[in-house]
Image (cartoon, rainbow, N blue to C red; front, top):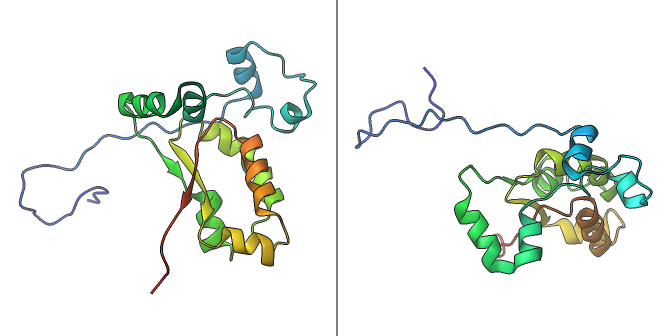
Length: 167
């Protein structure tokens, strides 16, 4: 028997591992997004044509923008589910793909990320070597990169990995 969230050997408690499975988000279709927002998918805005899904969804960043830090903290505390932070935009870039993920590559997956992770706590998209790599190796402006990410996924909070020097 494999136990995902607990050891197989006895421990100093009678507690058993949880058997609860968190809900798995699914990608919304354009028609589902249109019906929720009451809009047509034939939008004239170039931003909405480029990223039609992300411009119609709402998330925790919208709570923060409308109500500030107090409203954001209240929404987080009142959430009954699991709040995820997706680290793909930073960690895959740094660890898996040798720090060579271009902004245009992230923009390609941004609509899917924005839809699937619409209820996420945050997307970790910055930190470690991302600033240095954007300038030195990718020949991109790191500030433009952040702006494009925010435009593509406006409803999910962004966060960065911040650490001291490696020793």
